[in-house]
Each structure stands twice: as structure tokens, then as C-alpha cells.
Image 1 (cartoon, helix red, strand yellow):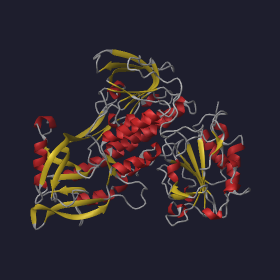
Image 2 (cartoon, rainbow, N blue to C red):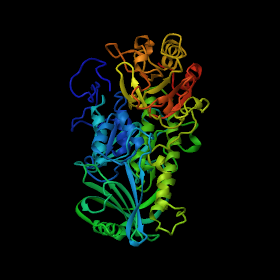
Image 3 (tube, rainbow, N blue to C red):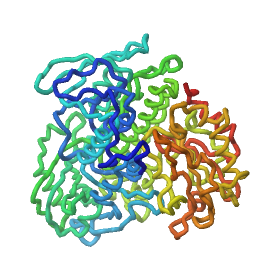
Image 4 (cartoon, helix red, strand yellow):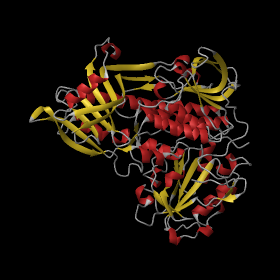
Length: 640
């Protein structure tokens, strides 16, 4: 974490200097008449987007919520490893790690062959595969995650806060103008109930759930099916003699259905997903009048011979499994994509719904808006043409379809009685097989974006076989040269809209003049064809758009920091202070060799270009200067 670049300032370094000319937040101040981005809904997707845009005070952002305040309990709780990597970029991964439950093992229980009325442990699986991520899989209250995003927003230069008690009533888009073409009617749901206000926006993002009014306003529909199976979910404080209650458990009984146990933060709380009644084709779950007592009784039957004594039900809900996906994530019909850029987007449950048991809903929702946020910032800052925004629907729709399809299969596996499914093959039960096969997916690590202007062809993939183009940048340990600090290379990236170039030096290169790294750095800093020179404005720090970091093969004591190129020791900020955190070397204490771990070519080295949302966009030789310039010119505009 870096601060003081613009001068010393005491207090909490997470609280950034406030930008001037911010919106008046007095309770009696009028709402703005125009905004750049209006976010509808303050769930995980909406808050993730707002936290990104709050870093850009020149972008007027507003986020509204129909409820009077943040939630307190309930809803989602699972945070996969990919999302934890994203939280690192926002600066609160360590807080989540400290407060949350870490899922280390998943245990599996099935009917005991000697007594099928009782359950028996049949196996354990390590929940996060070795070196799949430096982050854990954790469980924590969704309301706490909301608060962490709210803190990022409030501490950001824009001092952004949610406008509660406001709901979207109507939305129209005027495609004939570029001046705030989206007209939104908002309805007061608080003290002045029913009072309406009209606001015009350049862009609107609907993060307003499965019944999304934003989706309906742009003609979107959720298509899919329902499994006609009722499930209950409850967070409880309870005593039990079930031995694995503090581990994630998938339990299937002979006749009483299935149960999923998820320990929660704090050491005492845990969640249960309980299979309840099969529904008729034309029946909804609300018609059964199922209560928390039905859930507790069902869980007690499934857990036999073990007992469950519930002391407090913190939160509970009953739901029906459904799998639905909208046909697009923005307001532009397919026939008009060549001539019109999107103005309205949907994210999260507004465009994909599924069962909660795979633990992906909240994670995928936040990844939706993590993908969208930097693209909106690029366009609104004049760094990219508005056509860049088409990539959001193209990239995220495919991932949402993968989610819905995989979760549909997982729901079938979890609900079919043991021994009565075509999925029961081999020695292991179907749900153990499926769990192992889907570890990469459930970790959020299976996402791979297709080739596009933002994702290059794998022409030089052999130079970094462990950093696959289109997948997220896979961090690994390094040592920072200036102060010998051991750290994860990926943790230098913040959610600040910047691109990263990680340059890995070839054999024998120490950064001295004449070497490949020195030639690359000098070209990036000075040549008119360089993407750094071409896309960085005169009044900006040299790394404001593209941030170069370099890794050398020799260890800390074998390198001379003083001979590093000037671009790797740039002066920045109002005071022109030197940045000493651009140069790294291989770990010298045995934690791991990043070249070996990520398949980096030792002889030639390479450049790995990483998007602001942490996905690998390109792999190039160190001397492919023209190719690097052409890649960035494919979507970034020249600086003005």
C-alpha cells in the first residue's frame, strides 16, 4: 500500500483525500439532475461497481437502494478464491481473512451400508487445491461485505454513499443524443413515500435482483426452468454431536433428502441448506407454508444418528431452485450493435439466477461489475471509444451461461436420491465426483475470455505457460528489490482502472543498460510510439494508465537497484517523489520460484499484459515493442 505521494497526511491511510466540488450530502440537499452513472441496487454487484467508480471523482456516480439501510443478516455467504483476489485489489482481503471462516476441507456423508437409516462419513476433499490461488475460500455474512464496500466508497476521493429509500420506477433511452440520454424516474420509498424525481444519466446499471425493473425496461427476459424442489436455508446457533459441524459437509440420506452444512464466521454460527418437499409442476414454494420448524425437523432426520439442538435461528428462508438467464446484458438489440453503443446494463441476479448451493451467485455478480467498472471509467474519461462497452455483454453472458449450466447439473446431482441416478457411476458417489470435477469452477478460476480487442491471440503463449491468455493473472511469490520484502506479485494491482505490464527478465539480464529490460523501459518511457507515451496525458503520472513492473531472475543480493532504468524509479505526484516499488526478483527464501511456478521462459523472458480486472490480455516477447503498441492502440485512444 502506497500513500503520502502528494505530501504527508496523518490518520487512516485508507481514507483518501477528498476531491473538491463533491455532491452536497446534506439530507435536505436536492438530488442531482444529471449523473454519469446511475447504479440501481446496493447488493454486492452494485456496491462493487460503486466502489470502483468512487475512485474517479470526475465521474459523477449515484447508487440508489429502495430499502432504508444496509442489510443486517442473511442472504449469501460464500466467497471463492477468485473473489478474494479481487478483494485484495480493493484493499480489504486481509480484513475478510481475519473475520471469516476458512473452508479447508469438505467432507461427504452418505447412508451407512450397515444401517441405511444412519449416515456415515465416506470421504474428505481438500477444498482449495494447492497453488490454485494464494487466497482461501471463505464464508462470511453478506452484510459485512456490503459494509466493506461501503467503507471503500465513503473513503474514496468521491466520498460516495448510497441514496437509500429510492426505487426505480421507469427508464427510457433516447438513442438520438449523447447528452445524458437515459431518463430515469425515481420513486421515494421513505418519508416522502410515492414522491417522484427525474434524473438523466449517461449510463444506468441495473443491479436490482431477479425482479429487475431495469431489465424489464430494456425488454430483457429471464429464460430457463425450475427444478420444482423446495429447499430451506437457515443460519443457526446450535449444539450437536455431529463431528464435522465445523467443516463444510455434503450429506445425503437414504430417504430424508440432502443437507449442506457451511460453518460461518465467529466459531459458533453455521448455515444449513436443507432439502424439503418436491413441488408439483404448477406449484410455488410459498403455497407449502414451510417454516423454520420444518427445516429443523428435516435436518434432524437427515443427521441421524446424530442430534441437533437449535438454540437460536438467526435467519431463514425457503426457496425453489430455478435456473434462468437473460438473452443479453445491455439495451442494444443484436441488429444495432454495429451502429449503437450500450447505455443501460444489467448485472448479477438481474440477468442470471440459479441455486445458492454452489456458492457462486454473489461471486459471479461481483465479477460482472468488476468487468464493467473499468470499461465505464475508460469511456467516461475519454480513454476509449464507447464501443468498448459491447465487450461487457459479450464476455459476461458466456460466463453466466456456464454458471447456469453447471449449477443446473449440480442441483440435479444434489437432489437425486442415492443409487437412483444415472450419475451414480464408479466407486465414488455422484456428488463426490462432481465436487472434485468442479473445484476450479467453484473457486471462480474457470473463467476464460475469448479472443477480442481486449484478449490477444495466444501467439506467444509458450513464453508463459502458466499465465493463460484470457484467464486471471495467477499470482506467485517474489521479493521487492528496494526493501527485500517477500510478497505476492499480483498484490501490487489495485482496483484503480490501470493496466499492468509484468516484464520478466531473461537469463543474465540484471537491468543494466543494453539489456532487454533496459531497452523496453527506455522505449516505453521515451518513444513516441510507446503506449505509455501515446495514452498518458501530460499532466498525469507516467504510470497513470499503464503500470510497468519488472521481475528479475537473480536473487536480492545479486542485483543493483541503483542501475535500474528510470521508468522503474519514476517520480510521481505533486511533490515529484520517487516510486521504489516497481522492481522485483525471485524469492530467495524458498517460498517459490515464480519462473518455475508460472512457466516463464527463463532464457527469453516475456511481457504479460494484465487488464484492470486482473485478467491476462497478452503475452509477448520483451522486444515485441511494435506488437505491444498495436495491442493498446486497438482499444485505447491517443491522449488528449
